[in-house]
Length: 183
Image (cartoon, rainbow, N blue to C red; front, top):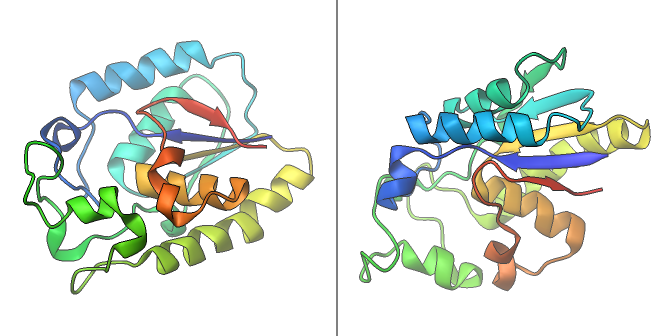
């Protein structure tokens, strides 16, 4: 089986700031969310976990799997999508003029902004490589694989596996600490 989980809450989630590759830690509520997820999903047997190397995802995986003998392996391909100069920028209803809103409102029209920013094509390429080279072969071997990541990174994997078009990219997003079975 193949599962995916998004990290717990961070202060930047609360503030509606675009995190991207900025290494923002979990806040106390995020740690509580991960602890609640540990209890909620304790009966699901995982053989291995692959995590983004970013602290918020890795710490979530550690808390969710606490007390289990499940290895957690960091993989750079599971890092969040890079947003370059837009990282830290506010978005959403509280910032109606934010240039970041196009990312969420019209993902098919999004153009990566400057140095360090990543296109959707690049995101899909690296997460697709992870799926083909690591996760799917283990799944085919009967292993229960958990992926711990981020909203855009997770959405790219879900969209790929479920053939969801880019225009509906965010419909695939997962809530903080909600486990989703993919296969």
